[in-house]
Image (cartoon, rainbow, N blue to C red; front, side, top):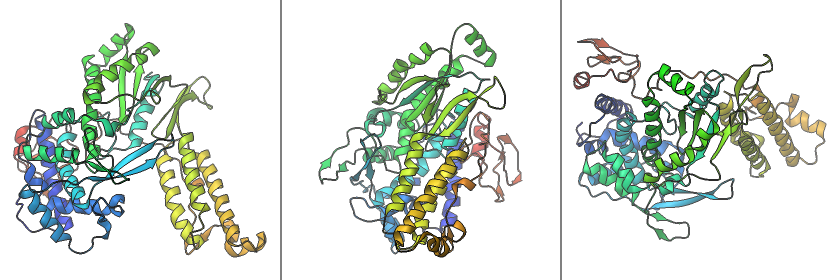
Length: 517
């Protein structure tokens, strides 16, 4: 790419970035030992900066400001001037990250979560850097990791646990773990060592290290150096955390592959051995064990030894060993094996919204309906409906019908109570006739979202060896382009067209990649 080109439009920039990301991803997959030593020019490429700015301005953090006091959402004019200056600073290597603004958020346990909010320019550079690094490291990440990765979500992790815990697979012992202050305690030296395994460009490495060492401006105005960790809240932080925590994925994947094919693993289990599968979402993970409780208890020391080189420790209060019949909470769900009501003697794994998740949504509904700042019922519904809709969209793939009915009843009652407080002089009959006709809550053409009407659907998790990455297709769906002599991993000389097939791992040859477009 020509970094001196003028800034393209968003549509053209997204296409150019997608093409380059697919190349990087395929090159990384074709050669697992390849070290990319010339990718810094992509960080300040006009197309990458345009896409990075669009993502920074469009996400939820666009309404928050860093130490510069500027909110990305408030910048309407002068965007090209901002990106031009940023590109020139990066190209001349004059760019220096500023301190992040610390923001503490209280947790349910009574502790606080410390977030780091970068400045506008730092966010754009981090977003551009992520666009370059993510397709490279995605080629190395294992299928057992689901957090902060493209084309993956929490439901995939829950579906995997549901599959492993079913009676046919017999992974009944669970090592439920949590890493203590993961984002705050990652060792910088160990993390940079893992980054260097794939990226040899010293300019990129220096930029990543500069973000790690940028420092923090605390809420009381004091300055604090960052010796360890990566600021939770930065755009680049989730990717760096996944790079660090991939040591866990690689450890358990190696143990699994060392046992050989399925018949060999069955023989191993009949001889009294155990098999283990890890399911990780960011710093929360569970290890499913097909064996005994002692096998699961032994994971305390094993996991601690794997995490120690990265400067990480297990949280003793959140880590435990349990049986799937007793149930455990993971990613907001309560997972437990129970007897089926319709089939005597048969058991199945069920997933319910956890008590903590239910208490969270009840608290949000209570706080929204208790505020007197809503001028009209329509204002209240505009705030409440997205909260209910988002919560139900997350939990609709489990045994959630009764919970949805309870939330519907609770929210309905709270809204009626709010309306009565707004009109204290009206009796109930007049109130219903004027403001709640037919017991339907609506105002300004906005109806109350009814959780009880949400259909509960079973989540169809694709049982493939891995979930495909965002760059697992040839270029872009629905666009006629030159396939570049590669189609679905097979050598197809001189064909033109649109490929919609997946690119399986292990079948992409280097000559295919070199002939792309």
